[in-house]
Image (tube, rainbow, N blue to C red; front, side, top):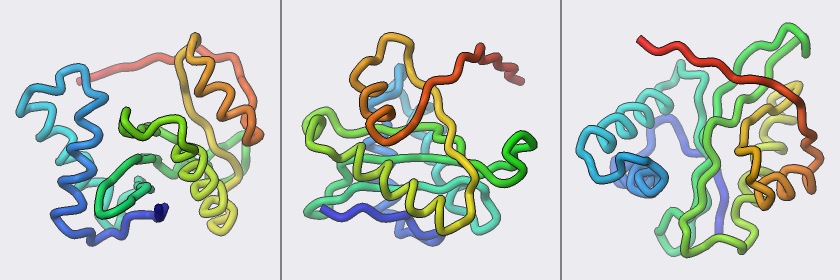
Length: 150
């Protein structure tokens, strides 16, 4: 299995594989609209000037996992940080260390890019994921998250 950051000018076939995998986690996964939203988001993320990036785990030409993240600027950290938007592994390949390998790749990439920290959000009762994050040195911060949509 190889884990790598998807290049800005990825082939259409790779983009479609990423979107197909991410469709599994969508609540509206059976709709064309959901597919098109994901496809548009992935294409925007792979634009050269985008702050978003994608890491994939691939084996035998199949995408097993995707990590989608954005680089922003943090005043409290005094520099760049990563917001990990999504970390998803195909249900048939879970508990094989794939998420951990993608996170380690993200950590190494972040260190090379002089990123000051990585932040993310997970469910309150998601003990498996919390254990993974804690095992890699992530720690819990208390926060309420708010959203505004147009």
